[in-house]
Image 1 (cartoon, helix red, strand yellow):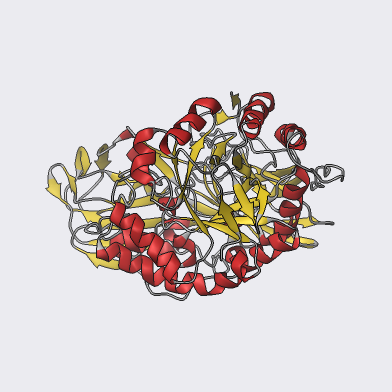
Image 2 (cartoon, helix red, strand yellow):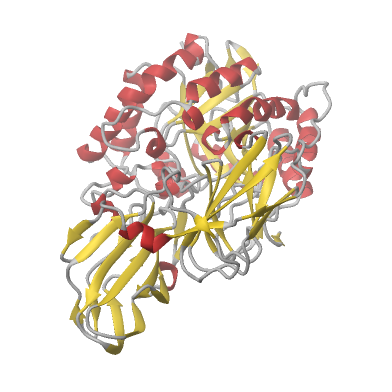
Length: 587
């Protein structure tokens, strides 16, 4: 028997009237040591529920591999902590989550098969989904409300009406959940217009909407679609995400609080998206591709009530005041901002050039024509492609089909240019000094498209490469290993660093670990690690100019910072500062 049920106008929880006042908090975007703090702050803002997606691609990184449920992905622990804090949970297992997440959460090994019709009743897709749910659901069933846990509702798919209209597929997902023991209320969510609601809804399943403004219009659209039942906004968008090279999006606390008040005054339930956005650590950011490819930045601050570093912002206070007009709010003080590390300078005084290091490794795959990252089994990061050029002189390098997503080109170790998917680049004028010159192409996967029909677009070199019209054959394709940096051949760095891709290493001392923000003035583009924890991508293009460093990744005494700089730096110093810089605000 489900704990949460519906009436013609609202919800009952264990038979008593209940309104969902929820906030999105993605466990996989927050350091696990910080989960209790973030959940406590959710309760203190007045939330009675938290919502989270489940990223299939992280939990099952390879086909038929054991499910990953530890560390950042210890979902059962997150659910236990939520329950201990007195919070209910809305669970959104996908299979597709969007979420500005790499590939929308669909595993790279799955979308690499371009014959599969994603998110349809194609048996190749549903069979893979079923095998995943066979692994995912057993450890989660004890945490469902029917079994005494905090999970009161589970989502069927995600904004499916914006993608397709395969009702048989939605019915398959529903049956897959039910047959594996999910008794709780099931819901769908779609953008609140008639077309999407019709395509994405299921009879007998709660329909909810996603929107951030025009509250009365969107609630009316929901009510027109379903004349009876609870009104709920499953994603009340109170901010937005950023792309590299674009503005930093913000929305005023006064505006969003007024819309939240309209929602609650109408008797609707709500899930605030996001309550706490967190961070796209490592290689987890997604991308959009409407007219052109646009990768998402590392920060997922989202201008949320709780900032990326977990501090209450203006929306936290404004939303708490609004919620207090409609529901009980704990009679406890609003938490103060957390401590920050004192400003610290880090000298990165050791370096290891990337290309010479990669040439010493044995992991090259030899092919006549370059192959994609998918074909190499590379799910994220970089691949170095290497061949020789028979001819010489000035001419055009042509990359048939372009690159996915960004390629740096070197001739005999010297940089000769960059190609980018977002500019639809396919050609590069170069001078080849002599026959047999070495051509190397370092290709970066900048994040898988997470929305629309281009999910699964291939990465790496996407076709044959030619010079002066003659195809180049005999390639070495070498993945760049970044899982363990301990073996890098660091040597003391010269003051004037060459403008070549290189790892840079430095150490710094910490008295008391606390949150901080990594600022990289003078650095261009690359990746950052602190004590082996992969913070994510930096890029001088902005808008984001600092990376969040969670306090739990630091330790008392000596700490290590490693950068993979792909271009050049004007110096070899970095700074740890006490304030984030996410870019100029765009309201």
